Image (tube, rainbow, N blue to C red):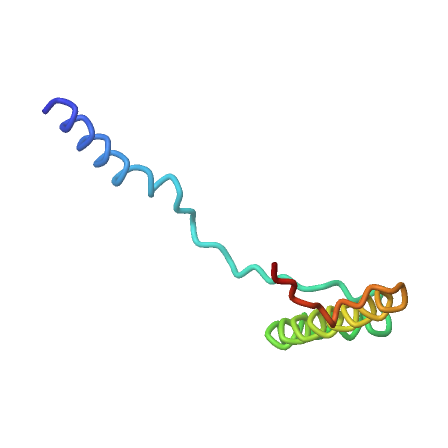
Length: 95
């Protein structure tokens, strides 16, 4: 019973006093932007896209990553085929 009482008091102290330690005062909005002063070309395009529309930047990042992964996969498949390793035609061996 004493242990249960101790856990109850510790839980109450935690629930009452800890949130006050975590909560901070209200501050102004923090704006994160990419510095575009010394950029040019495609880097400038991506930085402006990030600054103006973060969702479109995310979509372009996902699509670009997917396309580059596919291109690298096809390139590696071609290289493996040229070295004599045909990964496309696997035979199932049953004993």
